[in-house]
Image (cartoon, rainbow, N blue to C red; front, top):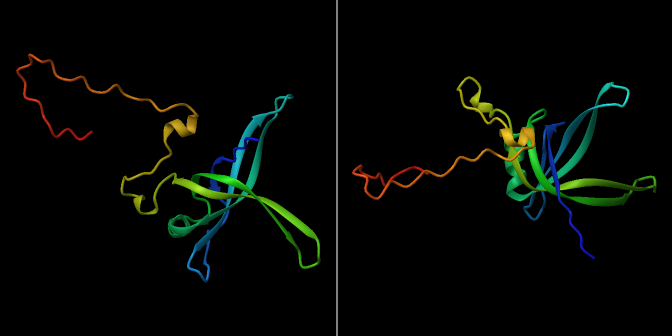
Length: 155
């Protein structure tokens, strides 16, 4: 039986990331993410639906997120779903579906960039769900061209 477990989410942190380190030295960061969907009902009423997701990050990624992210900041992440089950202190069986982070990308302005003109704005292709615009590669110079060819082109 084939299976595939991949989640891609983009949203804002609902709280500051919580970083812990296990006795074995593994960093674990827990964060909350809110994603929103806007839609129009059949009656024409505009509505917004927000979904709250708990995310677990491990290792170096956990440390980076804890260092640079805070409540309200936007992030895009990839991960996999994990189903956790446990028994509460009162003996009730509890369960929860959460995301284990595999990859991420910071979105929006970096904290040090305010007033400096530097920005980490989301890529336009992610915002609009369209493929990125790609420019054609530069044409090679004609063989009979008398112009000098520059070898240190930065692309």
